[in-house]
Length: 481
Ligand code: ZN
Ligand code: CU
Image (cartoon, helix red, strand yellow):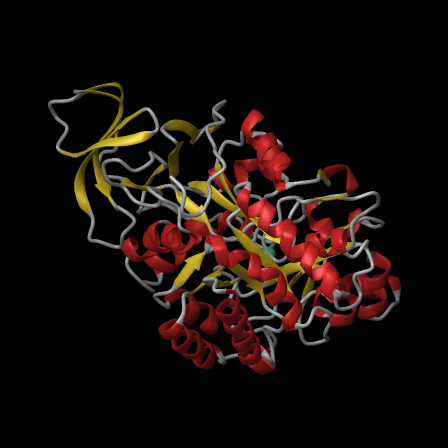
């Protein structure tokens, strides 16, 4: 036997959560073809791991990389430098297809960019672009409720959809699923989508039933009403016959600190009757668009971008307001359109949620922000280094499982997220002793340390020096080979 590549003498973390083993991993073409002792096997390229860790490439369960995957390896450095080989796009109700925009999209759709990026009338056109001009990582796509609403309701989204409009959305979603999308996402927290009653969401989500597509949601309320929101989410999943994923699970705002002790049992109770998962990012601060009506005195807020005042990116809103002689609310209005980081979670909740056996890791990074939340560059190494190694919140095996095999199972990504013969060769080589996130709230774009190399579908995509020229990423569809 002869392989294209053999990673020799590695500590193998296979993604299933099973105990590590020591050995070699052989790759030919896009697949893993051998494991264990490959001493008698030759290869075009030998990589001596010297005991360092090899794991399945990390799956970023929650991203807003819809546009980043279209603009070449440099755009994906934030993820590849963390060992990520697959990203799930189209979260929080926001997807770049199937809708064209004539003018600047309403927030938070504008997280993905101005109208020049909104040119995909169908998911097929978006997927075709990814096939002719591939990304360096694999892409799993969800279709966003907000994007569907803008198209179906002619931009008049500050109300519930009519039955005809909901039926139009359902058909557009069914079409996109047939073209390779993997599910449906909502962002019921956000202004215009908050006007959508549960019944509207169920009517659209009905399209998921036939293909067992996923229902993924940034819930209506992650604060005082978080338990009711979990109930609403479970109901939508049941009524549409769809497995559900709760996005970036958290208990937001100081008066709700500690309530993950209630939400996690509620999720577990739901999981006894239906399929439920959740993702989270390992930080006690959130980030999205800057919403003036939701600014609070007791939640420190940092500006991440502003169209009229780009010079304020990276400044605390309180300092900007003081400088301008305005209230926080007035300053937030003057910065519009803009983005922000909100320091609105409790570290004890973050740890309890992350440690829960059902949690998956998703960065929720915002790749186009001028001064992004550090989760964009640091999420995965932070779980491996800070939470698993330094704080011993769980084992390295468990940490890897939350970013690979566990996620692949929930999303139905066949032959990915695990190291075994026959699986796709999405791999990461890292040093468990030194891996760490370097990005923080002051220097948010510092690349992580300790990630040595990643391979996507058998091709080297990232080495410590940077991205390679490879663009081996594919569009990956739930439950399809
Ligand atoms: Zn969200
Ligand atoms: Cu999000």
